Image (tube, rainbow, N blue to C red):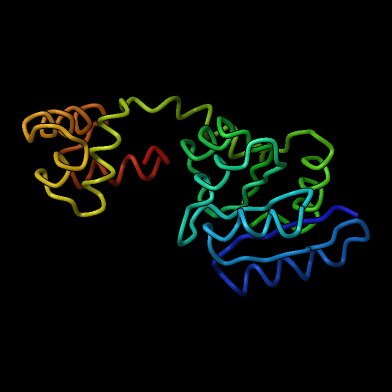
Length: 197
């Protein structure tokens, strides 16, 4: 039996996935959690063969969780097929990436492949990631833009990143230019749509 841990904050979706996977003769859902920060403990307690993570979760997002699970068979299940997410997931060692609108057969196939040491990437998501290319943002530009997206002022961003306010303004301005945006708001939106934030 393939032992699976499901992590998704949407209770109805998580329950439906668990029920559908329970119909597979070789897959058993051994644990379910609704928050990313509960995954590590569930992994220790239940020793799953495959960890299925949603990207958007409270406590800790799925990509951050995946980065803390080196050596584990991790599969991302998401409704956000943003190219930057796929690249970050692969860099974290994630072996599978499946959209939430995939069939239960496709998800079961992905779980089996990931469990056996292979990779499973949804073809459309992989093509989108290749077409989008790499993020043009530097780490500091991305960090500044991410803090701005959370509502932080220039002064708060400067304090958080241990930079001067002028330097933060320069990073934000550079990010706006690189993203072809007209202001901070449209730059944030563009970066989020690509999965670069």
